[in-house]
Amino acid sequence: MRSNLVFFIALAINAFSLLIMAGNISTLYAPTRNFDGSLNGGTMGDGMTVYGKLMTWLLPAGLLLLISLAIWLRVKGKLLAANLLLTIPALPMLAAIVIWGGLALIFILFGK
Image (cartoon, rainbow, N blue to C red; front, side):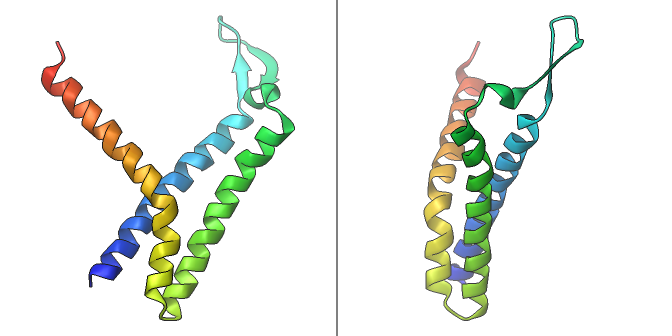
């Protein structure tokens, strides 16, 4: 039971990371505006290097591949390997969520 819980928590964290990466891709081609609100003809991704644009597409693809492989391993009955495969990329995001939530709580409690 505990292994299934770890699997689904790691899957949820990775899905959240995947949604953030999809948001990054959607802003890559968003048109930029001038200060008066008119479009200036460029996109937000115009200032990025080719390597940066490539990594913006490859990171979500790689994470989607890891999630698919972990689900396949779980179906095959290798839950430990699936948990390891999902937990390793989920731990940095979990640490960021905990720090972000902790700082928000500190600022709410002790901010003026």
